[in-house]
Length: 282
Image (cartoon, rainbow, N blue to C red):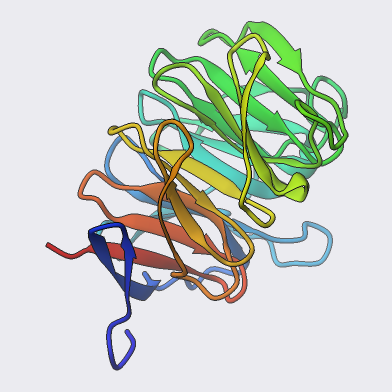
């Protein structure tokens, strides 16, 4: 902790910065964070499979920051993003393997989307995944495809949309993605410095500007959205995209973000590699 606690705010909501949260001793660089159905914090670490020591990319912690185990060393090549589905199961985007893996609470793979090491089947270096309340799945296929894919809860493909470009509805790195409770798909279109909003058939609904290389987006139960970018800033938006507040809680931008039921936020920083927690101040 800092000698003097640092405080940030979204409007009249204030938060105390706590960093580094948890002691992450495993090799690799922090890339994302999620909370599973058991309330465990799942911190995702990425490394170079050609040069770095093999280790578990998914590290589990209690809310007190104490380690609870790990998994994934034999299953994941290039960990990029992590998310949980409505059942609380953990999903990892294995970017350079062109595959997304679903893990049960014990850390065993129970399903896969895409064909491993087969680009364009359908993914080409995917970047993120998100779930609707009904189990609908959206995938950001962002590093070599400028595409968004929508799947039914049973993994049946519904629709894909988008292409690489700078125009409305086009993408330059579909990096972060979120499926809102009202069914809208929000995309952090990183190199186009914007968030684009679509319905589930791919029709463009809105473009929200005012970001610099947005990396991730997360939504709370009150219909607010939170965007991390490379300024670095952390922005809170109303459901219509209007800005509620903005702050600077990390040094070089958060690659991944998630919120907890107690109002805390956890931000995954790659440089330096750590988790920063924003603790709400009553």
